[in-house]
Length: 211
Length: 326
Image (cartoon, rainbow over all chains, first blue to last red; front, side, top):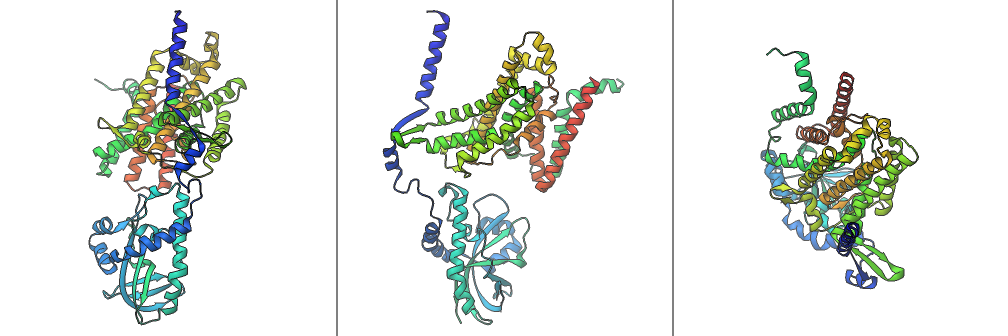
């Protein structure tokens, strides 16, 4: 056999082997059937957020960190406070905490409600600017791998914030008068590198006005 | 022995990149205790692997007195093609057919895409005598647009553990991307130093007309070089996509600048004909160490760009002075 023929035959065989191991063919209807009924459907962030709110986030509020205890830990051992109690989906200094507490309303503003805690510290519950990823990420129950793209992930945040604006904030604003006692659970965002404990704002998740 | 300018100047010229790297490492290690650690060592090497892949191809291009501004966009498109085929395959509803791609198939498709775009660059430059700057600038836009079309502007994620092993895995105690970029560098060194193609590349960069008169097929060599550069950018794209487990439509933005910086800092002349792959590796390490050091020292990202710009400027000034002295 001439040398060139042998060379090209071997090359052809190699190409055939590579091609055989590179692609496969299936019937499209079989692939669609095995992918499930929701395959190819756009992600429904509102439904996801609603289910997450009811089935995961509200049950998780029972395990929220006491705000007073967290504050004192942040002042004495920042590393431990962040390592033990914070969550975040990405890397970086911005971390989120799920916190709870009880206190007395001292002021009701246009944008927030100020609460005096038993320790003497004050905290603000946001009532106007409900934005960001704190509520989505604070519980640590959402994994980034659940989503096909970051747009879906961000839409979940937006929908959770909408739930708070529609379900949590209106009764809070209606009932929180100066002097009232409030039990709250909420999410906060802290920057590990630039920690400002005096300006913490809690986004409310669950609020109970006692009297 | 009495040291004079004539005795130490050749030494400084030859080892300028290594000396710069040594001074950089010394400075950062004095300012940050996290720099000289094993974990950070592997971290830096893993981070520069992508730039090493791209810069190796860029060195070949620059050695022919060319430039390739499209590598960042080619990287993005290749990564997106691989991710898209791996995740979604190609459904053909009219034939009720689904063409699925294995890991090998999807990766080969990505590399072929990058090589094809590189070949197109070479073809446009040689066929229409376009300046490489213009031809590859056009490809930068074309490839980025194609990436947006292919991904519809969304990241493609969830590519599987086998694929992410390429960018995040370890083999024999060394990160897989480091193995891969090392292999590419070794092959490129072999090609530039020991093959006819390598000699022709240097010859074209040294004097294109002299090379043509010597019988070198200039167009063919240039097309080969741009095709290789596209293929290596594609491999860089596979590493980025694998490391992030996600093909981002805006991946690789401004990677061409880091790549050109590594080439220039490594001592390759922008006029062509002078330089080496190993010099480029040193340049890529300097860029990587500089990036890493600035992050460890908490320097603002905006200042990082300013510092990197000045380092590149300094490298070009040194290059010009060296050229003048020679």
